Length: 323
View 1 (spheres, rainbow, N blue to C red):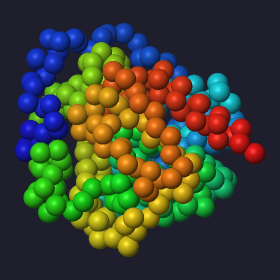
View 2: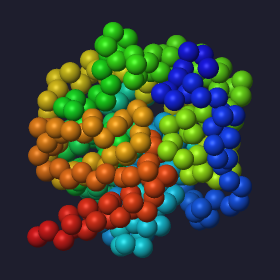
View 3: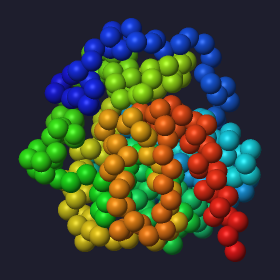
View 4: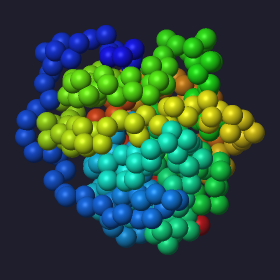
């Protein structure tokens, strides 16, 4: 796969399928999830915006879409919150800049607060998963006045909002866990591996680091596959190709605290980001709650939506009920 491997990718897709196929049938969430385009920070962001109440902005990771929050959106609206989820730049119906530099972390954080401006919102709770969590941590540090509270799925905050160290540090010290990042650096290599067999490439990612393969239906998988086949992976890979630039640009923010109320959601079977990585976060996040999700791999809000929804809504209600 062009030198790219997440932990667990040594297992061929056929063997994963033998353990339990992705079931046929309609998607779990049949709502159309219509997006509206908003002019934000020099790009167009496609956002789902449903419900009324205190706003909750959800930011997806790699390789995902706003669709990744399909289980949370109806739960939040039913609980009395305004649920907002958007395709990050480079994804789905949003703009896809053609330069690698356009995907720098500072731009991604500016997109998050720019969407608040476009929606006429002063502040919101931000919820992130995977790369979305990195964007949320950065937004909380760079634009603290716009962030009411923070929720991160799987990705802990360890005192540096860049999310990843430099590629040199990864190569020398962390290749066993984050070696796949190095495989993403050369433009065109991962794109070619994906284009050679999009179904196998995506299913290897989704199933290879999930606790159980049956968390995603064929119809749901098709939403992702069709989007990435149509648009390619240059945009989604852009943030990874800015890792060194992000580390340099945020060096002055090292050891900055997260001052907002924070919920850290861990997943017990995530092979990339195990719960132990969240140990000691209180050093940088004094107002911290931790919720442990059981029987979940990396795609936590999709694998165990009921547990995630309960933890998320309980946290949001506790924050809104405080005087």
